[in-house]
Length: 410
Ligand SMILES: [Zn+2]
Ligand SMILES: [Zn+2]
Image (cartoon, rainbow, N blue to C red; front, side, top):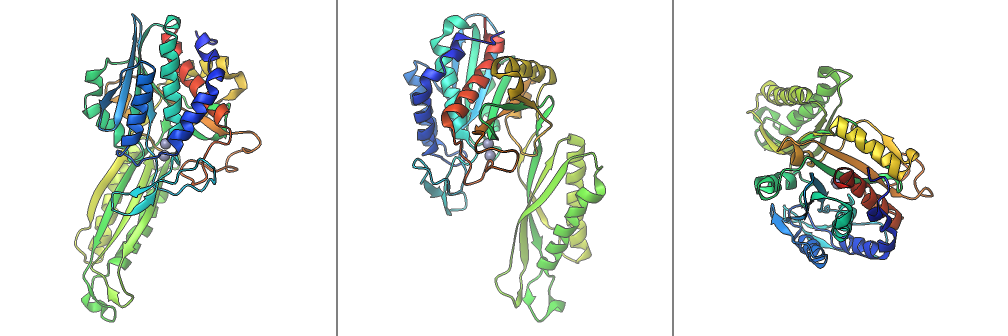
């Protein structure tokens, strides 16, 4: 078991290189499935290591390190940024703006920290490639686009990821988050929640604001829908089952004295169990149609936008990895937790070929900044950035290497 490895020992001397590389990615965030600069930069770096990169799933790329007989292990890093203006005030903050899917000009930021994921995976590829005498087998390093919209993992699988590359025995992945930079956190079962995003168009009948008798008011109807949807969680699901239902947008009307002909809203649902998910989605459908009926309105248009499937760590693999983390990072540097309410499409990579996987988190912050949950900016905040890049990236590189070397190591 590679509790200590000459490969891991080389991380400190590469600090200047990987911190500079990280800052370069930080300054060039791109939106989901538009990671054209990013993928080219990743491939250029891989090629400078002497590795070949294969484009998969549009803006995804894969490096395979074949090193004789032995297990095949996959490691995945996601590469996309978010449509938000960075407010960290750092000298190397992103100033990038671009057009989003609706044609709006938006700022772009690596507000989820995927720049650190890219950097750690590149360093893993570099170190594993330069130290082939220390391990055996095949390492598949997957740079996945489009995580933030749940589009990238499925795009890579549908583009033949597991036909182009051998089926691994396990797949690993990691995410930076608001914790201590020298600590990792993992769960033994469900790691992340499932998520469903749905767009609802409420159809009414337009009329003058003074003549409700000639209208079907989609705003009042939509408001009833939104309110009643809250009872799905409180009145239809067991208290022991985790469900979050949020209506995040509501748009209708142009003027106070016109009853508009339609309203739209978007909701987001998080669940951790397939049966609960089905129950909630059925209830949402019933409530939306039932409220429309009660108002004498046509059936609403209910459109699924995107979904994140399960991300369930394999229990045995997660317990083994926990022990390996304790042995290499330090007994007290490893936390075991329950599922997060956030979502990930990482699980698709393993679930699509029925291969076990583990996904874990590592911290971004120094102990002078992080004083417990809620004391620092988290993922998707315009202030979310590591204050100790060298230390945080070192932990990410080390954790990734521990995971893959525990199967590939000699
Ligand atoms: Zn993320
Ligand atoms: Zn994110």
